[in-house]
Image 1 (cartoon, rainbow, N blue to C red):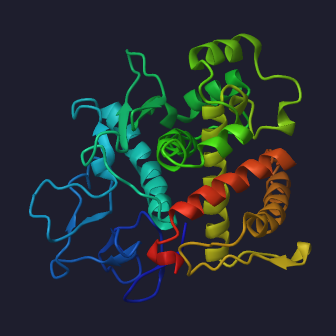
Image 2: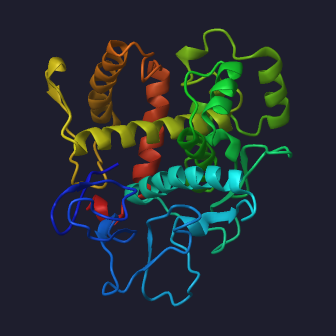
Image 3: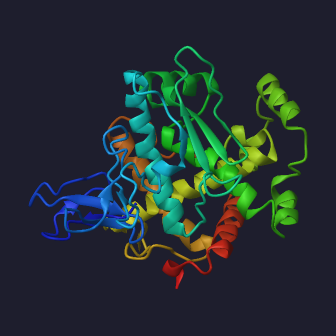
Length: 341
């Protein structure tokens, strides 16, 4: 995430702000400029119709005359809880907040963000409450389904422990399931499919059988040498989604660190990412050279607070190769993105 400044007084403001707390200027997020801009009755743009229900600060272009128009992120949501379900609506707002971060990053990277409303198989989100009904987190035909119970910290922590996962967040779920969608965009219809199969495995393997085997037997011994997580061992599709999500974790955290001027002097290296650049087209090796020292420092800070490591992962050579493959696929698909010029 980039850092943002009030366009009037230059006070530091945050991605979710609707007002500058220093000078009182109204703010909104502009999806064309990918930044927070002045918002008032003279700017032409309007607040997203989900401003209240989703605590959304994104703007709708003034050219859209629909009084109930939704912003670019909220338009991607196909299903949400009813207005009468107050508990689910609170969780929905949390999920939408995380989703806006995902959508920002997709746009920032220059990836195509085509809505389910615009084409069959386009990206969409069903944000559902499992209160009294079964909700299966997953992806099918462009639609990502998320259980809003994952917004509840005790529930999510209980599931994390039951699953033996080192990391479980709503943002992570959204990145993982959105990664499944981008397999259908970046890999399946392209000449990259053969390379994917050579590295990740053959996705034509029976998925239901793979799921059953994984939950019956768990991850195979020595899985850390080939996969970023135990879940990634289940099937090539899951390996892709886990690797894609991890790539987004790395890029977002590095961008945030660079935007706030974080330096890792103990490693005799400052972060090289340019916070003013929306797309860093460096080889993945250069990104990794920034990432590893940062994780060492963040883990040390957490330990100083008596906490577990913030980044509980080990990137084996095989995992680095997969992350590099994801990086190249994204960079190839965004070569004509304006921010990459």
